[in-house]
Amino acid sequence: MSTFIVMLGPPGAGKGTQAKRIARELGLPHVSSGDIFRENLKNKTELGELAETYMNRGELVPDGVTIAMIKDRLSREDCGDGAILDGFPRTPAQAKALDQMLSEMDAQVDTVPYINVPDQVLIKRLTGRWTCPECGHMYHEEFNPPVEDLVCDNDGAELYQREDDKPETVKNRISVYREQTQPLIDYYEKQGVLTEIDGDQEISEVTDELLSILS
Ligand code: AMP
Image 1 (cartoon, protein in one colour):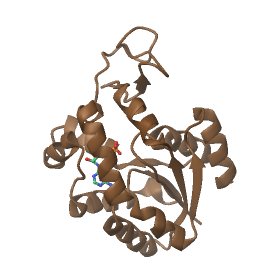
Image 2 (tube, rainbow, N blue to C red; image 1 turned 135 degrees about the horizontal axis):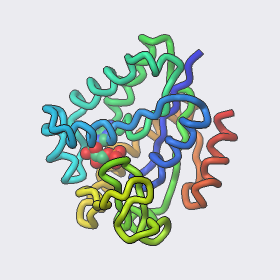
Image 3 (cartoon, protein in one colour; image 1 turned 180 degrees about the vertical axis):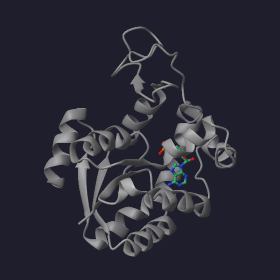
Image 4 (tube, rainbow, N blue to C red; image 1 turned 45 degrees about the vertical axis):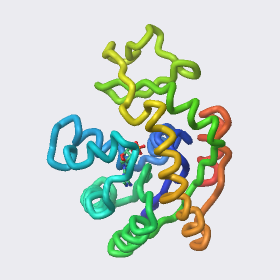
């Protein structure tokens, strides 16, 4: 029996942070479409170059490309027992493609935690976010600052602000979410797998709630 969990919620809801925590707890791989795109961007692959303009504008990379990338990732051996999906699916076409992929693996989307956070909190969280280019760890200038300004606690690398965490792009990411991803709430509600969680709480409180739902 495999377990596939789809983390749903607006950008800045804490999907990535929570996905990493529950992946560790449940011993499942954390599959983040955004991380895979960023990795490709860093390595200047063809996929990275294709995705770059969309990402920098806060827009979605076209479905065909994104679906093929995730299909490849889920076909790897480490996803045999399931995965925590973070950032995928983001459109109804991606959600349908995922159902199809999983049914070919004799699996299905088991649970969809929907982490809900008000818009004004999202904007504050995203625009204060700084990322380590080496280990990918994320800091927040107000809520979770590094010990030394702009330097990663883990490896001493200089932190940078993701192009898409700049204020003008953040607003666009939120409106893209409302238009293209919000319909998935309905989609998964109809499948009977959606559970709403209040994301405007301490990180560990959200994790505890998630783990109690998933156990
Ligand atoms: P994230 O780290 O999940 O916020 O993703 C960063 C960016 O990568 C997004 O703003 C999109 O440009 C792109 N991206 C990530 N996941 C997807 C997806 N499922 N569909 C389309 N574009 C995506």
